[in-house]
Amino acid sequence: MLKIVQFTDLHLPKLGVETQGNIDVWKNFRLMVDDIKKQVFDFDLLVVSGDLCYDEGEKSVYHQIKADLEGIPFTVIPGNHDNKHLMREVFDVPENPFGGDELCFKLDVKGHPIYFVDSGDYTVSQAQLDWLSSELQERNEDTVIFVHHPPMLCGVPFMDNKHPLKNHGELMAVLNQLGAKAHVFCGHYHVDKSLVSDNVKLFVSPSPYFQIDYTKEEFGVDNHLVGYRRIVFDGKTMTTAVRYLS
Ligand SMILES: [Fe+2]
Image (cartoon, rainbow, N blue to C red; front, side, top):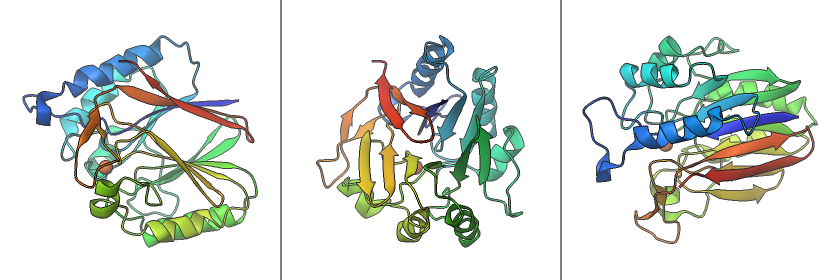
């Protein structure tokens, strides 16, 4: 039984910088870290799925995150507010399988391959699409994939219209090549949503900074709940929900 925790869209600022609305996102992040350290949920891996930094990639922020997560098995992928080069310098990220500079890799956890895709540039590079395509074409088992940006529009007008993954259609076409279900875990949208399209089951996870009101065309904050996702997968059955702390 594979058990994963997903944190996403932390948006942590460097020392001395306030977030918009003066939200104490470091406090929120540490609430979540304290919660998973209680080990009520005995997870195998924590995935931090992008936008670790407030505005742009900061080495000092990455170092502090690494220090706060000491002793916890975790991995990271970048979001559009990150710097993949600084992330590779600070975090222990596996080698890119095709020699590129994307933070893109596959991990085997308890016999389950988990795919990690780098969409930090608002696009999934052709090299990643080719690699993922060659991997997924060969598979006919349900598969877990993490990528910061959702591979489809999500019914959140502000994000769908202004900030979608530029080549989400291309990524979806690759995911559709898998001969089984693709369980895709994302962030970026600052909402808690699940969507299904063909063989793709998409889970969008909330940010501990703020959630976006998905009933509005323009930007609006829905709530400031702090939460993270728990994932349990036995190769066939997927169980997942967001745990809110406040
Ligand atoms: Fe993002």
